[in-house]
Length: 382
Image (cartoon, rainbow, N blue to C red):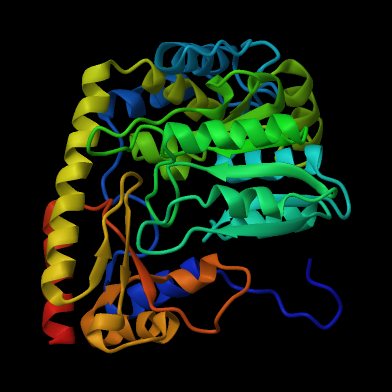
């Protein structure tokens, strides 16, 4: 992607994490928890290492993990991917999405994605030779405009890339929105790739409904999942793709030339994790909803306009009420001024104004860290 004379680009997450270290800032930017995952999951990976499971796993992942992913899909959604040919492990969700784009998208093909969109999407699509076509979710509600989505489809559209729960806005697509996406995909004979890494992180009684579970969608959908967010083990980089055998075979064909396979003992650990009982997930959601409510109330008290998320562990705000317009300048100044790191939402847009007032904060941190970050913001912005 870097042609002659073009300098490599550093992601905003690398830039902001470096600023956090330089200024000793509370990092509410990048979405990784400060806490480690449950001890029994870590011990399962340690046991696998001690038992000698340290060599290359199969391309699709160890059988125990593939079976656990399949059972997880059955238990929560009634889906039954075949663990032998309908499940593929990957080095995180980003690799799974990249492999899916390489498998399903050709030069000049268009991929529609919801905007703001996670910054890796554009790179994954361009690596495959495709073109990202954004369909914007507008503040304050960040709901999907179904007419706008339908109007974006052309004869070159090949794939719909759907992220719900949605990063960075926290929107959880409702059943009627998902049913409209499904109807459009069937009518226009489109393939669908769904990024569902925050599947278990939904609040206020909202429901995560996989598109693959809707009538007519299983045979045209590749579903992407990940263990990192749910189990606070982002460094293990264990993600997966599930779907019908023909689509997963194509994704595996491309994935073999990326990492081929990785994380053997971690795969055994995640197989154990996915068997966690429903009490784990209830406590997980309740803990994050408490942190969300703390962040929303605290940011509102400081003077931000806050868009309360329905899911994920991010909250989007507007800095306009504080007298600022440029989220990038605001975030670059924030570590030194307040000792806090956030992410400017403008990095999640393909086109549009050079400046945007939206800023994203992550609340996947212990309560005392969030309280410290809010105190610093309040003092520095007073």
